[in-house]
Figure (cartoon, rainbow, N blue to C red):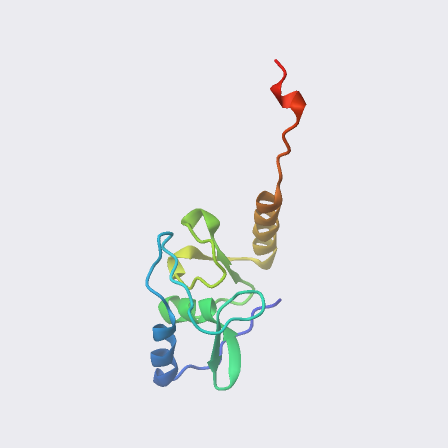
Length: 122
């Protein structure tokens, strides 16, 4: 999915945004506590348009996301949730790098070690 620029936010939008963010949890994630898209990412409406909440948080703290880059939730920084909007857990990456990291994380999470009776032989 290609990132689109966010609609212009009013001071009212900004005031509505932060109450929908929980305090940091044990992993340091600040989780979105309002509606989400089907995939688990936070959903926030600006001028009637639904946008991804972690992109709003990034934009408020760091400015616009440059064309050609996306935000990655960085597992090594403690982030384990798509609902996280902690900008310290996010990193600007190319779409290719984001896909590579997503695929690597999926392979790691779904790997299964099967123990057999052969494992017990000397």
